Image (cartoon, rainbow, N blue to C red; front, side, top):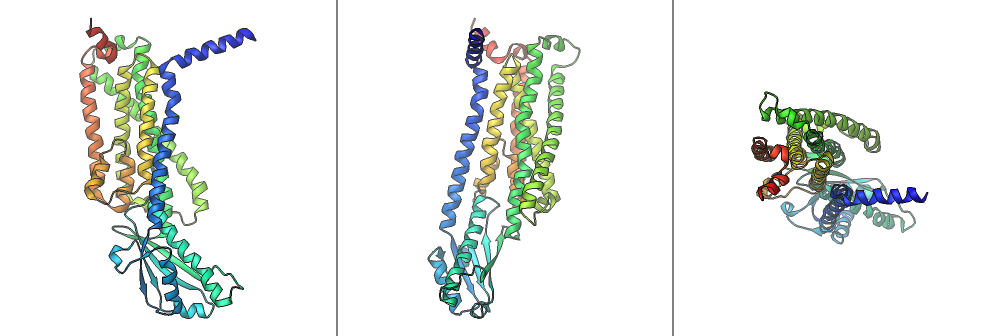
Length: 400
């Protein structure tokens, strides 16, 4: 047993001495730490926005309970006199006071203004619901002298007003759940696409078969393009497989837990679905090209895969916070957000929901531009001996 323990310690030291192993061990901690910070910041911003919500009342009743409701809401939110400055507009119907005085249920309608579907918009919707729901205890106390605590006297129907459409609040909540399904599969496979493509060329270098491959009577660029197309085909199949798995999981969990869930076509429309597919392909091509570049940097498969693991981290570090955060209200800032690398699927989904075609074109164009720039640099590597030696080794040899 003593000799076995010595061998275990020796292998452990060898593994931890390898920087590639250390990178692979640190990546999950970095990914989840960054995602946690970004998600926490988005949630904190949503909570702050919800606690300072501005409400405008349209009072068609003018009765005692209508005035009591407005007074109660003013203690929990900011009541404004101009509807254009409000985050939510609450409409009190003409029969509100009469229904309550007869112990009948009274319903108000709330229209919440949201820029897009995010945690912030859901927080505002839930805040409006909670304010109206908590008013029930006041009404029940007045009507029954505190002897009955009914929670169904006053109800609220909430609508979310997006830039180009108005939807019931439960539909917006269903859309947010569906967004995770739509975006999660491309993000997962994009990280693996870089690992697959980097291994395809690093394996040739590690097995010393790249020299033989380069002697074939075909242009070098054809060899690299063939590896790129094969990696992209594998990544596409992975996207379909992962997407089906995530979708089925969502249907069996969120679909049952959230009645009235809607489908992908209902969320995005056919044009938005095409935009999502296009953005997914541009992301996969970009990550495959990055993977090929990393494969050229390294002389071993493990080294190439550990470097490509950084792409996995970046894809999730960009995608998840963008998914949870609202788009900037300023058009210029919104376009700059679309230029962030690895953001294409998230931006495409959000832009399709709010019907912002310019934003979709911007994110597609930026990712195509990044791919072409890196592909141009790879073409220079392929035409030189850097493809065989690796860039770092080439720089070392140039010193002598």
